Image 1 (tube, rainbow, N blue to C red):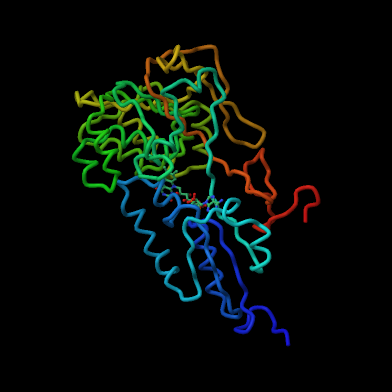
Image 2 (tube, rainbow, N blue to C red):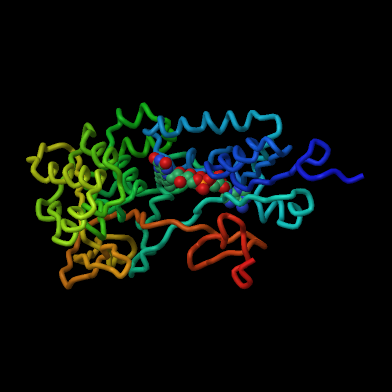
Length: 362
Ligand SMILES: Cc1cc2nc3c(=O)[nH]c(=O)nc-3n(C[C@H](O)[C@H](O)[C@H](O)COP(=O)(O)OP(=O)(O)OC[C@H]3O[C@@H](n4cnc5c(N)ncnc54)[C@H](O)[C@@H]3O)c2cc1C
């Protein structure tokens, strides 16, 4: 006799691939179904769960990391099982899963970063910011990387939260890092760091920066570092000013105010400086074997068809001597074997979350 799906005789069996926030919230949504009996198995390629909450979120942001308590509660449900060290595509295949599960959730994150696509990007000393992040967070795949912290000048490309994290960790004092759960080897390397100047380079202006107000304020609270903003770069261009007047946005206004306050502050002579540079894009990493400088081009903003303000390069350039570059300009997913993939967008094609074949749309 066959039993209907989602009953105790025939539970809905769900496989979740990955164990970051998306995976846990998906598992929770299944387990909360009252009309269905559900069993959830989670498969993670690493031995430990929690994805980028463990390997991405900065070690000095323990409050954010404490979200894992919610995931532990979900994992304590007797209908939930976790399988660590199991990689989809290596240890288990799509055919295995469809044979044993009614539904599969792909929650493997955005595992690769977008490249700048400029000459010199592959020189020694040029890194994805996420490699540095994974290294200081003790990710097993990255713990053996080496970053040349004997360099004094560093460029961080991007204005998002990852760029802010990297700038802050590089600028933090030993005492500030010692109280975090940063990897011991990273603490040791950062303790010996000779970094003095960190250039955070954003392609648009202060009003378009993706960082939050607490993130930009945090940089100004570091013991050994000060934030430097050029008054002319903190000032809003006419298009941004007009947009902000038309559509006031509290976060943007707070960010602009904070940056303008930094621009007014006289130098304090701290050991390290974080230079926030706005409306510049990298065009070349200069060096023979390793990065010796970065060439950047000044942008101006123009109104795009979708109503947003986009950067357009001018003919003004600047060369900043730097020995290390961390790029953080966006992330995308990687293809999983036997699962449709949109390589241009870097996502699994889907309709409201349901995986579709892009050729047929079903
Ligand atoms: C440096 C950094 C700082 C951040 N700081 C914050 C912050 O302060 N606040 C905030 O809200 N967000 C922050 N984020 C963003 C946040 O971490 C992500 O939005 C979130 O982790 C995404 O969750 P996810 O589940 O989609 O993917 P992930 O967290 O990336 O999890 C994906 C999981 O899938 C696993 N996996 C991948 N491929 C396979 C496979 N083939 N088989 C099995 N398992 C696989 C991975 O190992 C990983 O565990 C930060 C991100 C980074 C990189």
